[in-house]
Image 1 (cartoon, helix red, strand yellow):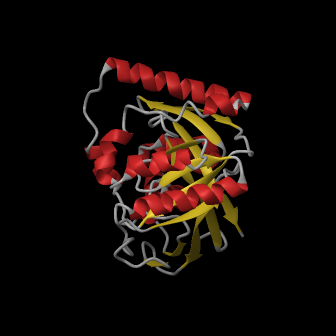
Image 2 (cartoon, one colour; image 1 turned 30 degrees about the vertical axis):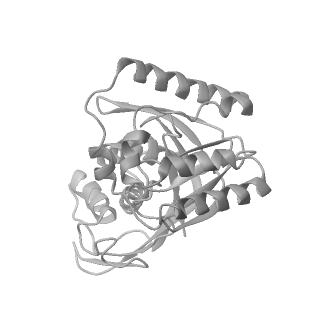
Image 3 (cartoon, rainbow, N blue to C red; image 1 turned 90 degrees about the horizontal axis):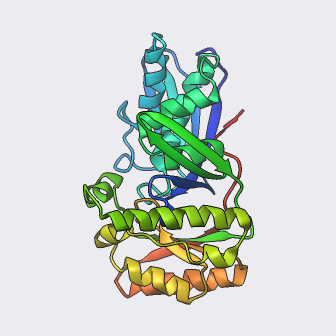
Length: 305
């Protein structure tokens, strides 16, 4: 391995923000960290983590190594021996793009070791092809609020600043919803009126955020494309979301495919009230949940020497 030992820090992301299904994402102040160390034999892998093997494979099937190996094969190079330590700070299968962080880390590590054959845009395009979720991988890579379209294997995106007066209460239940399962409950076709509804509110949301018009932002966390279908996988979801708004949140939503829920707030005291109210509401469905208060961030994935 030609590069010195290093680590890569990748932030969490929340996607959709209600109406922006598969097109809006935001980087959050939670991180996974991946450390890479050269070891002797070509193709050898030592994988370690603070997560148990039941949560993440310690074999070459894990996403970090698969992305790492992909770059070397694409460049017709032998994959070097590597020791990877994965320190998880983002809930897995919670709706925060943990899989995107793994793919980005593997790509960025291989790119560095090969002396950067790919620029950032090329790396992001590869990552999107591997991940399939541009609204997670793009904000995790570039930071901030991202509006993106991935069509015909072409990624287009715009990064926008997030209003730092708005932050989040993240409420995480004691169960997980695999992304594949959350995708499987969605219909193959939707009503034309529902498509118009989501296009309208996602467009209005971005315009209101850009204008820092909080009163309009409050009206925009609405959806007809995914949340009500996924509610069957998240017991008590709609009730907990409604309680969050009643407790003072600007808006509430499912984070990505779930299982975590997010409330948008603009006041520290209200944030605590909202978190405790949503936590208590979930207990009525016999679901234990934790909450934390986090902020959006403007910086994406980075190397740590």
